[in-house]
Length: 151
Image (cartoon, rainbow, N blue to C red; front, top):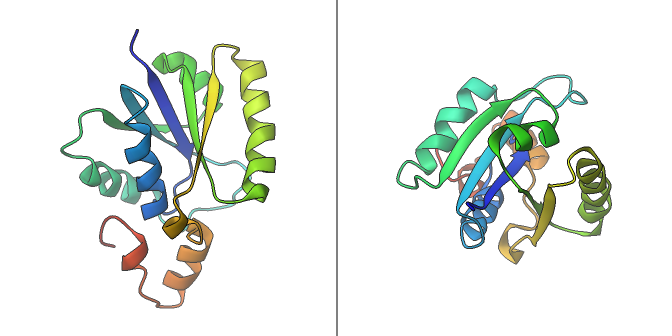
């Protein structure tokens, strides 16, 4: 059976830290789907999904085992629809763990076939967050060092 993992997030924007998690996930799974979800708790996006999708696809153009999927449903429902058995989440710190642990338990309740796999962020990417990148970019700072594509 093919091992399919979803790496879900809003990816606003998709960072080198996210890219690192995808590359490391490919060592564990046959296919990794980057699931760009609409987050109902966020009022708006800084980088529109239609802008981010081709940027992310460009990064993985030579990697057929990586797919990009936009979704507007529960992640557990997306997993069922795609036949994915795993979710991949990156953890930078204990705060991330507390948040992600709760979500993983709920996802497991909604889809008992779904297992969440946590990967500890590589040290060089631990301080990078999409929130910080947006703020730096908003005020004209150079964020190119933190992204695996050009904006």
